[in-house]
Each structure stands twice: as C-alpha cells, then as structure tokens.
Length: 385
Ligand SMILES: *Cc1c(COP(=O)(O)O)cnc(C)c1O
Image 1 (cartoon, helix red, strand yellow):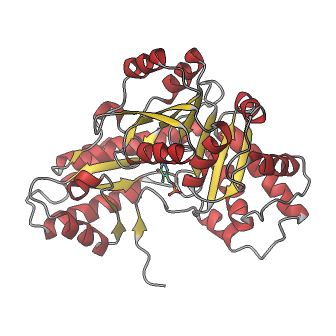
Image 2 (cartoon, protein in one colour):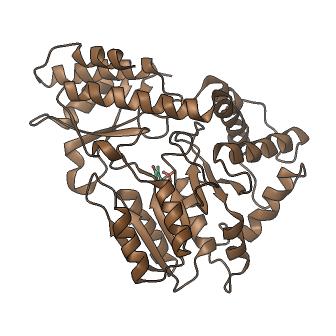
Image 3 (spheres, helix red, strand yellow):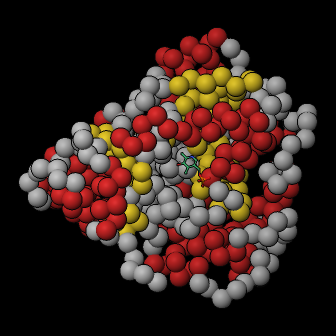
C-alpha cells in the first residue's frame, strides 16, 4: 500500500485502530453465539449514543441514503403530505426520495449558509396538515447545523412525525432523541460513528413504530420494509439468532467496538472535543484568508465548508494539499462547487490531525502564490485549544 494520507473528508473518516482490528477478525457466522452477543451489544449501545432508551434501533447493511429511504418508506404512504426543511444538497435528496415514494412534498429552502427559521417552519405547519417532516441536522454540502431540539418541539406541537437526517451529526453533535421528541434519527457508519462505510443505522420512537404498524398499504420496498427487519432486531437484542438478509458481520463487530469507545469517552466530552477543535480550526483558517459557507451561528462542529480567498486556483490548491499528505473534499453545491472545499473533523479527530491539515493548507496556499505569513494559521490554532 502506498504511504497513508490523512483522510479529512466528511466521511469516510479516519477510523480508530481498535475498530479496524475488528474488520480483520476471522470469519464468523451471522448466527454464531459470539456474533449474537456483539449484535445485541451494538443495538443497546445505540440507545445510549442516541439518548433514546425506549427507541427501536435498526442496523442494516446499506449506506446513509438507504437509512433516509427506509425511514420514510415505512412511515409515509402514497399521497401523504410531507414537509422537507432543506439547508442544501441532502435536503434536496430527501425531497427526491419522498417524491419517488408518491408523497406530496413541500420544501422550505434555507438561504445558502443559513437555517430555515423557527417562524418560517411554524408558519408552514399552521398553513397545512403534514404527516411527517424531515430536517438535515448537519448538511454536508454547506456545513450548516440546524436546531434539532426545536425541530422535535415543533413536531410535537403540531403533531407531525419528525425524521432527522443525522448522517453527519450522530456521535459528533449533541442529540437527545427521546427528550427532544424526535421520531427517527438516522445515520451511516462512515461518519462520526467511526466505522467503515456499509451500515445504515436508525433509531425509531415507539410512536413512529405504532404509525408504521397501522399503515393501510404495504411498504413499497421489500428490502426496506420494517416488517422484515423488526423481528430480526428484536431477536438479536434478546440473544437469539434470526435471518432475513445476511448481516454485514464484520461491520457490526466494528460498530460494537466503535460505539463502546464512544460511550467510554463520554458523549458530553466527545461533543465538547468536536466543538473546541472546529472553532479553533475555523479561527485559524480565517487568519489565513479563508471564509465559510455557513454563518458562525449555525456552523457545524463535524465539518467546515471553506471558501477560497479571491483568485485562488481551487483545484490546484486541493491537489497541493494532497501532495502534502492530507486529503480534503471539494465543494458539493452545484452552483458554487469551485469556490470552496470541505474538511471533515469528526469521530476520532484530534488536535494533531488539524495541525497537520493546517500545515498542508498553508503549503497549498504557498504553491498557489497566495501571500501570507507562514505558520500563522497553525499558531492561531494552538493558541485556541
Ligand atoms: C453523507 C450523507 C448522506 C448520505 O450518506 P451515504 O452513506 O453517502 O449514502 C446523507 N445525509 C447527510 C447529511 C450526509 O452527510
């Protein structure tokens, strides 16, 4: 394998060595007694990490997009009214998924870099009766974080089911699913949860499970149908084997380990670590002349969407950062792709990773003939952590 470059994109992230060790365990049957224990542990750790002791966890082979689709495929029926609150690329994706399922979809779009305000959401909920609404907690295209607690409260007040796309936030940003009355919080393994890509993870409230059980039409997707998966999750959490589709055995072993490490670190400590590092990183980038897509008051702690200084050749810059050993991601918003880049700082991220990233960014600026005092970014970062 060629020399490892530090992977600082918004998923997949750098994984803990103990998690990677699980990926190289000897092969194991999905009904082996030790695997049943691991699967059960992973399900119960999820309730702790999601702060949802009464929720129903699902661990399914698939990506975050499957988790998005599964949540609404089971709760929405053809012709139902659904509200999508969008802060970028993944809000648009949710609207597309819902339309494909035959829902009547209204979208509230935030201005780029901002959130949709509580007043605007409430006004829409006053105007029309919705069965369900979705919110992207952290939109990975803009680095905007929306208010998940307020979202849950609005859902409760207006009696609307709430689905939070937490793919870029679960285990990196504070979420108290049960206390905040959110019906579904979903994510994927490769982001702040810290496991290689391939698992769709959902936590569903008892109320949402009731809504699912009272559907009048069958779920349109066979693979997504919770009727097939609920007995499996229930069996594994009671220490019994069961089969519908073969579980991603090694990913589940890795998930058990990663969630164990997350719980061991302590959620509050973990969220504070993300916040301290994110803020110091952005202050350092400011000194170097960069701007941000997200406004300060709604900037995420799990990633930054960073605007290039005027006249910088973005493609050349990103290449040069990679040549210095750090991989960052390009822009994702179609209309301004080349004006910004993205850095993921979630999961296992440590101060040293961001120092390495800032050094590579400074090298990138130098190679693009951008004038600044070498070392000022790193220095600012170290003053702030
Ligand atoms: C990455 C991401 C997704 C999609 O996840 P995949 O695993 O790529 O399918 C959805 N929503 C958000 C907010 C994301 O960051």
